[in-house]
Structures are given as C-alpha cells and as structure tokens.
Image (cartoon, rainbow, N blue to C red; front, side):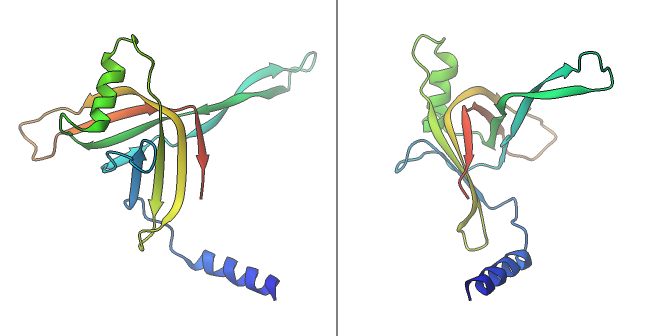
Length: 162
C-alpha cells in the first residue's frame, strides 16, 4: 500500500503547474523580527564549483578538471527607494560607509518562492550575509517609473531548505 501511495504522490507532483516567479518573499535578519521584506526583484541565488585544469602528463589529449571548492553568488535585491529609517538601509549605510572601522554585522537571509496558497514551495537560507553594494538606478525625465534601488549582499553559504 505504501508503494502505491508513493507512486500516486509522485504522479500528483508531476501534474502540478510549475511555480510562478512573481510570488516570493525575502526576510533579512534573525527571526522573529526580520525586516524589509518587500522587493520587486531577487536574483543571484547561485552556486558553482570552481575547478582547476590539470593537463595529463605525456598524454596531450586529456585534461582533468579538479574541484577546488564551491563559490556563492551575490544576492541582488531591487525595490523602490526606501525611507531613511528603513532598517535595511541603516544596515547598508553602517556597513558601506563605516570605513571598516567596526566589525561588519552579518545576518541570515531567507528567500521563499510561494505557491498560489501563499505557502512556501522552495526556500533558501543564506548565512552570514552583508551588503557589498548599493545603487540607485538612473533617473529619467522621459519615464513614468518608480525610483529603484538595488542592494547586493555577499554571503558565505546557501542551503536549500525545501
């Protein structure tokens, strides 16, 4: 009976529509008081294996790709320009304008891709994140758009939770 149930569950999962990319949430900071979780766009959830090429001695037709370690990307967050009192902006300001005179405060970041019911379908936890870049997109008198800021966060590890 459990094998049949497992097979039916797998068949139901295959029939589900793929998740949409516009229903997501981002929480910066430790729970239960995360801050600034409304963003227009999130990108940079990447991992890659760095390798070193090693040529085969005496056999020029071959080269080996030896693993060196895993490299994390930078998480990019875009949103409308925040208020001066935004906790995320205060953290960015302290980190980027502090001149490295104080230790950098790192925080966890949780990114969740949600289903139509609002429940998380996928989730990634980024450890020891800190701001490395803050940018305001170009102002233009010919466009009727929001002023957008982009924040990039470096992080040490990422783990897919769901």
